[in-house]
Length: 102
Image (cartoon, rainbow, N blue to C red; front, side, top):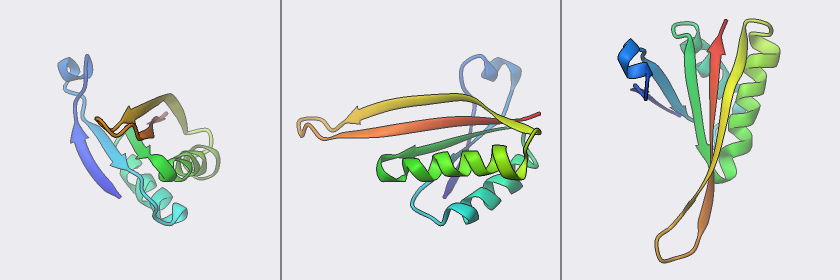
C-alpha cells in the first residue's frame, strides 16, 4: 500500500490536504486497518486501485464504511476510468474511491 499527499482542484485554494492510498493485492483486512488509522487523522482519503486489485479497494471501502466506522464515514464519490497502453491496445480499468469521515 502506498500513501501520497496531494491537493486537487478547488481544494488547493482551501489548502486542503488529501491523502491518497494505492490499494494493491494485499490482505484486505490489513489494508482496512491501515486506512482506518490514517482516516483517524484526516477527514478525507482517496483509495486508488487498478486492474485485478479493484475488488480489494471496494472491499476496504465497504469494511471502513459498513463495519468499522458505520455511521461515522461514507463514500463521497467513486470515479471509474480505463487506461489504454499506447500502441499495444491493452486496457486497464482504474477506480478511485473517496471516503470522508463525518
